[in-house]
Length: 105
Image: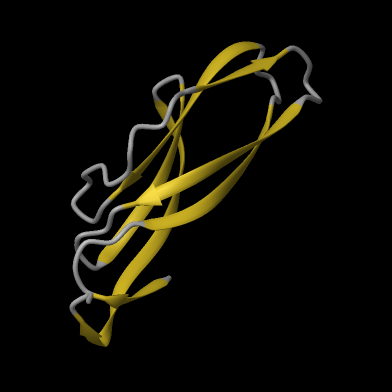
């Protein structure tokens, strides 16, 4: 959960880490990230696709991404990780404004 102290437009900068294991997968795959807001809208810039290449069952790759989230409302946001346009996982993030927030100066 993230608690925002000021009201108004803000950008949250966070780091994300995804560890991907090949398992039975072989070949080349496109990995994409998006952050979605409470209504399902995209609230992050468009990140370039990462190419993953798997040749062995024991192969894995750690993917790091610098996330930028532009929240506009309180609620449940989520990081969606897609492989070849299929959503592989979603990570939730609750964003709230502090009760005594004031507009930014």
